[in-house]
Image 1: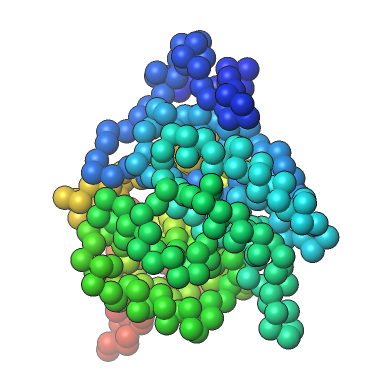
Image 2: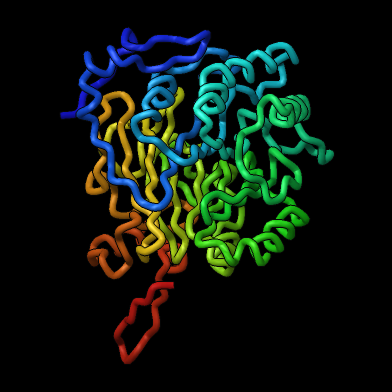
Length: 379
C-alpha cells in the first residue's frame, strides 16, 4: 500500500525538516515501495523553484528530502533550477536570500546526511543567455551563484576530477561513474566549452570509468507541452548526441521541461527529469495528468542496460509505471523512444504518425526505394 505523507508529520531541526519515527509509524511509510539496491543508487530531482524571487518551496521538496533516509541514495543529482531567478529586477540581497532558502531546504540537509550532491545550473539559477553585444543578460545571478557554490561551507561533497569553471562546467567521479556537467542554462554552448567537453570525454579517466553520465538543464529534444520549440532545447541536438555517443556517454540527465520521461534516441539514454517545484507540464501527445516526481536510479554494472528507474508521484507517493507513458514522443526536433522501446517495436500507424508530423530523418527513419518497395531503417 502506498500512502501520502501529510506535512503535519514533519519535525524540524533548526530549519531542516526531518521525518520523525512517530511520523513514520503514523503514516505507514514502512510500506512505501523501495526497490532492491544495485551497485550504485542515485536520487534524481529537478526544477525546485517557485515564482520569481520566491524563498519558499513547494511541500513536495521537503517531502522528497525527508524520504531520502528510506531510499538511502549514494548520490543526489539535480537537473537545475534550484532557485527562482532569471529576473533582472531582483536585487543582490534578494538573490542571496533565495540561495539561503535553497540551502535550508535542500543543500544543508544533504550535507548533514553526508550525501554528495551533483547539480547543473538552470536558467532560473544563472542563465547563460546573451544580449546583442554578447554580454550575459543575468551576470549578477551568475556571479552570486558562483559565489554560493565556491564557498567552502557549501561544498557539495562530490569527488571532483576537474573543477574547470565550477559550478557551470565541471566533472566528478562516484563509485566508478564519470559525471560531466555542462552549462545548459540556455540552448547554446560556446565552441570553446564544447572543445573542453569533447577533450574531457576522450580522456583516459572518463573512458576507463564503468559508466559516463552527462548532466545539463535543457534537454536535447522536446517532451513537454509549451517547451517543444527552439530555445527550450539544446541547439544542434543530433550533432551533440553524435558526439556523446562517440564517447559512450550512457545517459544525459536534464530538467527544464517540467515533465518526466525516460527515453532514448539512438544509443543515448535521455532521462527527462520531472519537477518538484511549481509549474508542472503535461507530456506531448499524452493524456497522463502532470505529476511532480522523483526518480531513483539503480545502476547494476553487470547488466547491459546498466540503469533501472523507479519513479514516484511525489504528491501521492504512487509509482509511475512506464506503461503509463507514451511509447514515443515526436518532438519538433526529433523522435524520442521510451527507454524500453526500440523503433522496430513501433506499429505501422505509430511510424506513420511520426512521419506525418515530422520527416523521415527526424523520425530516425531512412527510406530506400527497392523495386517499388520501401525499406525502413533506423538511423
